[in-house]
Length: 249
Length: 249
DNA sequence: GCCGAAGAATGATCTGGCTCAATGACGTAA
DNA sequence: TTACGTCATTGAGCCAGATCATTCTTCGGC
Image (cartoon, rainbow over all chains, first blue to last red; front, side, top):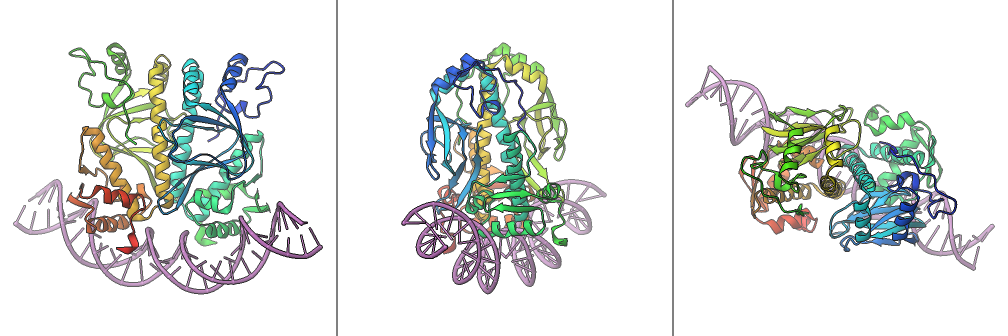
């Protein structure tokens, strides 16, 4: 479900603060003209994070919204006894704060060196009520996230372990392609095996074993511990969609 | 996470078509004044469904949006080999079409006699661009659904069978309370055990067994096959949140 | 280059929930 | 009322993935 741009980018004058923004083409401000863009930027504050630093915790008052410009983050919820479900990963261009509640419903933590911009919710709300275009983008974004969430429910509710991992890899491959704007066969895994397990509703051991399984089927190859090469994309797709006659192999 | 109204209802004149609308206080049009409401209503078409009739199928071109006024529906996705995941149930007041895609991503089917209103997407889009208030409501709705989806991911990824069923029942109890506007201890199950199973990522047999388990713990009672009475709400909550020392019992 | 610690992979065993099978309860039609 | 079909419950055994234990890699720091 690629995130199709609907507005073309206004060219920016030399020296505009957003001129070299890496995520402008793919985020909510992409439709704005130069002065509006500068206005929005002036409302925001840049923040850098080291791996394992958190942006906020589940239950904190939801006073800010965020836009990711570099790096990668994980979103997770804990149960009383420590079981953890990662509900999503965020990458450059993603917007964090599609929510209406008083408190954050999850914790957000950096996976690697990460840069993001935050806005106070009040300032941001004021800004968007003056810019219906941005409101529309936000709605689009929420709808997109909802579709992703639904796919993840299918994965968690009904897919077998190997299918889950295959689906996850295809999602990362798509994202890599969207980010680079061209076809890709490789992508990085900025998260640990435990994080993958907590995202897919498995254990780290099962993730390792299924990784070995996909490798033995020649669907993927590991270029390094944290870098995957897809050798057979359609095969991986069939596996992900439960069309692979798994039991036959 | 109750859906807190943010706008008070404009009183309607006698004979207004929306005067006796059962869902006006809880849906996207609640903030509208009498003429605007009448305008929106004139864009919509009422449709009645019998149990098992579908509204649309996964993959159909997404040309309409819907508002539920009576009854209950299920939303589901199928995998290639017939595995099914129900991604949600819809009840009066719910809005269907929080999406941006060209095709519906799931199938929607009535669980009982159901009444809904549909709008062509173009007409609806035109209407909302003239009514930012509605756009805001839609965004709220999407954010609310996203929060629900995240909770469901935790359920599917990390909760044990009994915890899933307890969570599900608490959700239905909350909904019954929101619908009636007062505290409740009972609610109906308009869906079959198979539907519950396909929503919770279990089998119908496990649903039956966990139902028996919750009953044996005196957390619930069945007033009828499809009607649940909650006997111990905080106990049920603890079970749902994984705080119940299950293994001790 | 060597060392140590953390992360990842692999092996052995266990178990919660699934599968397959049978029985029970309910609602509807004659 | 009885009979039947559907849905729900209960039982027995099994298996995918969890858990527990061990070994292997990787990589940063010296």
